Length: 112
Image (cartoon, rainbow, N blue to C red):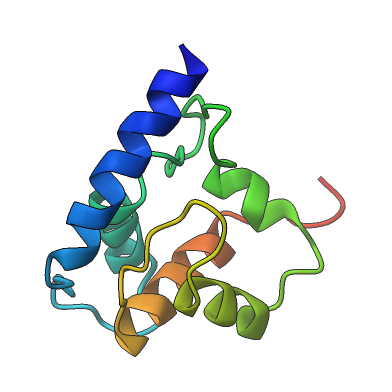
């Protein structure tokens, strides 16, 4: 079953990479825009909204956000360079800024 999910994700990845990146009218540092971009480009592998069940292929956005050592700059680099099984989506700088804003909005304060 897990192999089938990965195979499906990998089969669709090259096709998704060929599509033009729709910035959805991205406004830099706008978490709502970042969430919309995440729903469009990331939700096939990642759980992008709080409380959603994540699969074994990719971590949830909540899990990524809780990693305290992930600075904004680290996240921008991570989103701009293809890695692992993730396709190269050629996200615009505004898209990346909006995604980073969304990820940062999912962080909980350290004392919670």
